[in-house]
Length: 337
Image (cartoon, rainbow, N blue to C red):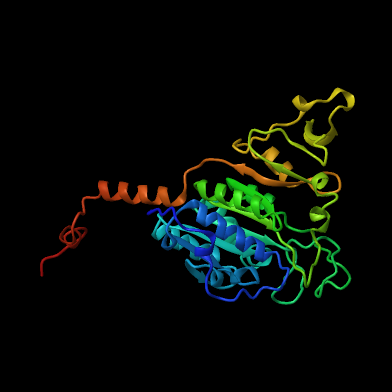
């Protein structure tokens, strides 16, 4: 892959008018992607952005890279084909909670299982925005929407659980208004070899406004969020006086200084641990009992699909007695006529 060091975020902006609603969280995510790609330093022609259908899937129009606005729920298999055909490309999938986990659910779990080297950005606003406010696979239980006027009766999907259940190796979470953190995570996602799933909690100002307001509230956000970084203790809070410990088989929030607890008692985040149990517990933490975990939660090395495919093809070719078209035409059962 060719490299170029002089690109800026502006170089990745297309000449198209951005048509998301004013205040939509997608604007901030777009900015993060522009910043991350500029910092990675690849030439623009080495990036491909692929989307499905939904508000988030307008992303390709706003990228000055190769891009493809595909069909509903089918971004993952199209991106899989692009990456498998040309492993040198940096391939990014932009999708929403409906596009990826409803009509695209089967593709979603299998791309994670195969571990193709793709970066998937899942914009999760817990609603269908483009089609005007129906509940989605991640809508909260009891949520009132256009299609659940008396409240949803379905438990929501949790992206982290799906990633781990599908044997995924990378899961991270950010929130739309933290452009710096999202950029940092996207850089880590690209460095990871394999399928990277980055969930971004994203506000829909029209149909699900302030669904993450409890996390973005300036007065309380430091007590309701924890940014996890590999090798660092799980400490959070406005005064950095709260920590997370493992109490038997469960996580527990404690206050440092009480009951003799110190920083040494707090869990150290290990994103590289192959065993996913603690990663699952962290990904499932929810307010008000726990802070919401942001950052890279899981990042485990494993062979990628496209590398194994190339190796298999090379091994078969090396062992095959057929080296030319002439060999092929004279192989198997042949007759002279």
